Image (cartoon, helix red, strand yellow):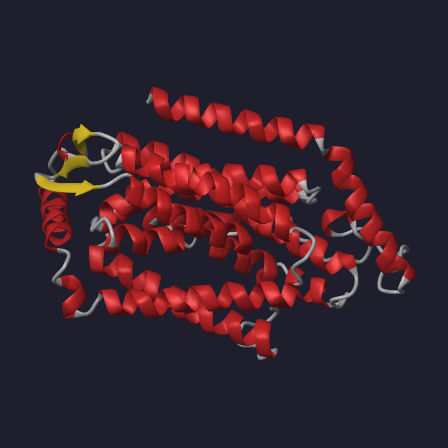
Length: 376
């Protein structure tokens, strides 16, 4: 418990310090963008303030955000991914921010400021869910701590650098297009993982998943049979889960997470949608271990990326995002409690369906303006 608590405290304090010391820059960036859009005739100052305090912007009821965030927290804490993607769908489509940002065109800075706000807000929600889910899965014996920390180390550098180079430079349409493309590629890869050739490489994961499911049916003590670290060095880590032995080289998740962290930070999501296939394919873990282990790596990357976004003066609608974070906690509490009753294959199918539909929809919308999801 102590390593996780210390890590969480240090990262949260660092994020708070960054936010508090850069509030003036944040306000100036948003205010300048509003003035520019007003001068261009895109904003009527007489209209009531909406989200981010912008006159005429969409006004979202806090309880709608709360309910959506419960779903986001549940899906992320259940499969260890898709929290950022679902948060992005909420902010872009359900709450209408995508259409609003596009209304300013690609030349006005408010388009990019709102886009950055969406990216950072997504990560606040995912970071909250990841922190809560990590702790719960660790208590249940379903988190491989050395592997999760290795993933976190890999994401730190890339999660810090990407916002520095991309904040204020990405339009909403470009963001949607790349967001959809990455998710679509993921869905295609996950379909391959269900083929006989791919399954043949994961006998250990299948055996562990089967043993876990049988124990759930019998009402056995799941925690006592959970993750047990047998050995850990800089070159190798060996652990068991329900009597099945697994091993990995720490350098592999560090390098893999560096790339994943860069993609996740650019898209404004958690990266779990890439960490999940990485952990199942490269590390050969069963889905019952993937959610918790992925959550820890995501949490570390999220805090780093959030600090970087706030450093660039990215505005956040705190009253609304605060309500969403409460919903995230509720969903993240429910997820670990219910996921043990969902078959390993069912979790993968849920993941694939969400990936394909989301990927196709946003790729078409972002690059070609073809709308499948109303409001995007």
